[in-house]
Every structure is written in structure tokens, then in C-alpha cells.
Image (cartoon, rainbow, N blue to C red; front, side, top):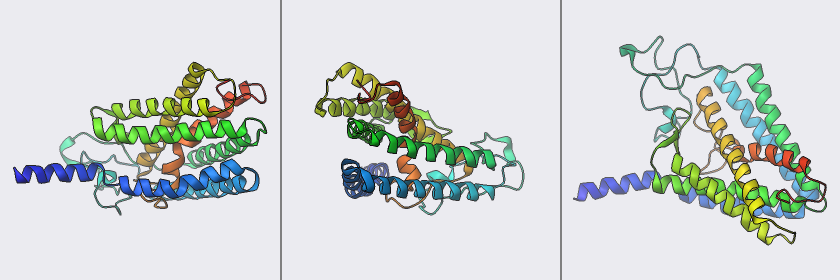
Length: 281
């Protein structure tokens, strides 16, 4: 009985091992971000510039690191390095100088990215930064729109994290991101919708809760798609995390990948609206 309880406790510790670091990181970073968003103007633009510079740097480091990994042979069927308990196991080395013995199944192969991959990543980061700054610059509803976007993205991330670890169940895309589950995706989407509705209720503007829920769901899907795309890129490039800047999360790209994708969709929605109308108007 005692060994079984010990094993259960070890599994629980691994499942929630980074929760404390995530909470501490959020307690520091979220107030800073909300303060800059609320003030706008120079403080917000400085925040966007710093975040953009960090994202560009991490993308360049990912791209340069992957250039040194051979793409000739796929990885063997073994526990991938990104699932290792060793926090320093960030790169996935080629396991064999040739095809793996035994003819086993292969996991996702490491790719050597070219200049197109570099430019696509840089373009997405820079365009998302412009979209975020442009959304906030709208004098009447810019603050509301950006708060709507940020809060639903944060809710999506937290909802997916908590639901996925409690419910577990089938994997969402095991070859892309082994830790993401279908339950986590559903929980993240529900949390995004709830967060969007709460912001819509708090905004002193005519509000259609049904419309707010639909827009929040669309942006929540975009946020999760951005997270999956970043996971796919890291696996293809042979990296566990984009960096180590944020305890419990990894790098800035690990933390802001969902926002990058959702900001692009939010900017399209804002362009489709009349000036001065909220995203869910």
C-alpha cells in the first residue's frame, strides 16, 4: 500500500510540478502587462517593443540551433528528449548515424529550417506586434478590445492547463505536443469563452453576450492553434522550449505563441468593424 501511495504522489508531483512557478511568474508579469495596457501610449509601446525584441531573439536562436541538427534520419521510437525530467535536455541529438535498428516506428523527424522558415516566423511576430499596438491605439475602444483579447488568451491557457491535468484522457496531437489533451483543449476553449463574456459584461458598451461568446470562441481556437503551431515548430527544430526566461513556461515564445495567433485574428475582426465598435459589437 505504501509504495502505491508513494507512486501516486510522485505522479501527482510530476503532473503539477510547474504549477507554483507558473503562479509566481503570472503574479509578477500579469500586473505589469495590465498596467502598461491600461496606461497605453509610451509605457505600452515600450512593453510591445521589449516583448517583440525578445520574441525575435528567441526565434533566431531556435532557427540557428536547428540549423546544426541533421535532418537526414528520423528519431527512433523512444521517449523524446522534450519529455525528459532533465530540465537541461533542450536539444534532441540524432540518435544514430543511420536509420535506427529494428525497423521500429519513428517519431517526428528533426528538420533543418531554411530561410523561408526564418522569414515566416519573423513576419508573424512582427505583424502580431503591429496588430497589438494598432488595437490599443483606437481611442474609443482600444483598451476594451485589447483587454478582451488578453484575458481570453490567458483564460484559454489556464483552462487548458488545469483541465488537461485533471481530466487527462486522449491526446490532442501526440506527435506534435505530447502533453496536450482533448479535454485540455475543450477546457481551454470554455475558459476563453467565459473570460470573454466577463470582459464584455464589464465594458460600458452595448453588449450581445451571444456575439461576445462567439468572438471569444473564435479567438480561443486561434490561440490554441498558435500554441500547437509553436509546439510543432519546436519539435521539428529539435527544441523543448524556446528559452528559459519565464520560470514554469520556458521562453517568451512559449508564453506568447497563443497571443501572436489570436492578435492576428483579432486585428482582422477589428478591420471588419466600424471605428469605435468593440470586437464583439
